[in-house]
Image (cartoon, rainbow, N blue to C red; front, side):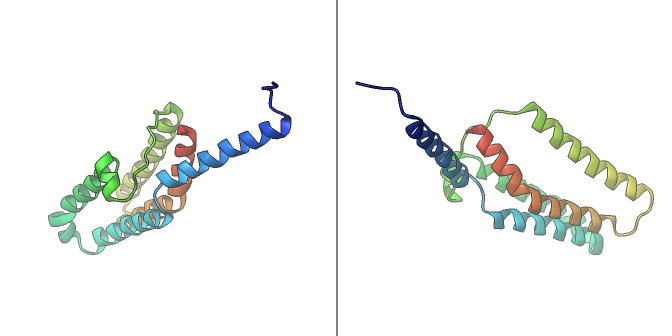
Length: 151
């Protein structure tokens, strides 16, 4: 009995593994519309901060805490099931990815603070718009990269 696979069988097995990896990553990820909606919310929050600063002073912290709570609960087993995301692979921290994320955050926050110190008008709108577009455009790519790396 020959147990060595033929090159064609080995190629098919590797293609099947790759296809199943992509299926698992797709099942574990959030929809592209969620990323777009999150980007719109951030851009809208920046606009609201610029146009209605009193509203943000009274309700801004509550809104941010509520959104962070929804994000945190969505990453738990029961919360993921409530949000119809039953599959969630355990992702080991990648130090290079964490450093890149920290660099982007420092650049966005530092740039916003420098522009505010320079007196740039409507800085909340511009920073909210930049963060919202970045999240909506790069969020699905980043999620797919992290999920396929974890698998």
